[in-house]
Image (cartoon, rainbow over all chains, first blue to last red; front, side, top):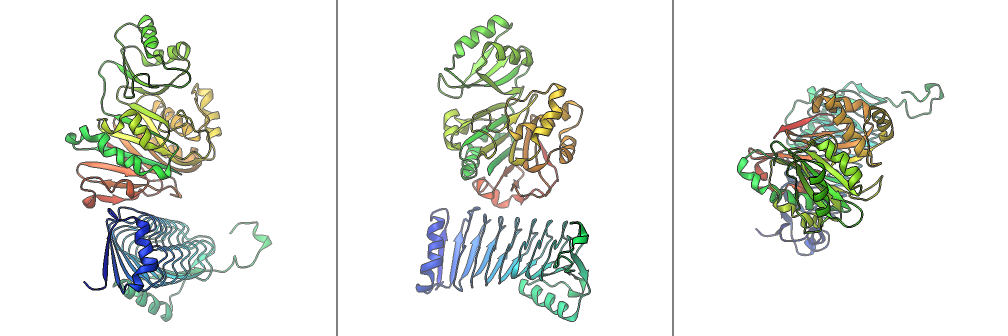
Length: 230
Length: 301
């Protein structure tokens, strides 16, 4: 296919592949890059800064698509810890499960995980959107500052602990909320947001089945009477 | 950081290839643990006798002198087998004598020898150096058996010596490897030492290993012992454990230390990361998952 470049990580070093994605792909007029035999390598397609379509065949290791700008990356398998960490824009789609800290600190873009995401999903989220088709582990959205997380399954303990302005939409059971996180009524804006985010992920759940979790903002100001207990 | 590796072969025909399948798994974890490595091998049980894996720490290993001493002290035939070259520091002693008595005797007659493991099934090799060097030193790519528990170490809290390398053992046919760090190993030790339990290193993992073995001697099965450990052991851990009968993995509540399991009809393979499993036959069609926090996963050998 024209505009398609294929790499096999069993034959080519990851550094060479990433260098191609960073420097050479755009000049070569390539639109799609396919990476075969991911075999758990770290930092596959990290730091891409161009609107490329990147297909990763197999399971990715740590930090797949980290710091992504503009690219549309699909992992046709599972992703290791920190997939899409610090993403700025573009999309990352994981067809299997994601390990810990998926989308950590992402400033923009959309991370879709069709399976489960492990603990600390969306930790310190700074503006990106995350849609998880399955469930998320404990401490997800910890200190998330901006952006949205849609959880189609259940959430573990301490969901949204010390949240700032990020908003969580959760469809299943929440084992426990973290400090200062609370359920809030869904508004029309929330239903529209959930519908739009599910649409981006290609999921068809009823937005009416989601609950909103956001910050009660009681931690925003120091309270000396609280004795450090919240 | 450390790497953990476990492999249990369900299909008997694969047991001849245990070392061959395990070696790339171990070497794959080199970047997580480049300073030492160790492998416990189960499944070559000796009937009517016991095996002790021995490491001659200081000085020049004089296995002939040891053999003579053993024959003078204990009745029956003793066998010393070496996977390393003649004159190496490691031997597996097969003895008809009571293994505890042999161990006590070794402490006096050959104090430079460190007993790595004891039991009917377990053989243990651990040493300092990169995993590939250790595999080469002991020809671990050629071992056979039912299952292995292995580790690559990047020391963070105690010295780099063969004794501080993992797996740790306690009692018989039991070993444990650890990725993580415990914050209360000294408290655990203080609790166990008055019960007559002796420690050989200042390593945090040894405390966990001796704790679980003590619980099993008190009547717990390993899974129950692990559940008790949740309230006794404080810190970060992915523990992988082996007995002659099972392979078990558990992660702490925070699951900071990774683990991936790939299971097929033929095997259960475990590593800190998938890249150590990627070479295994049929892994593309394996059930791949990460152990959930504080959930105990175990497979019978």
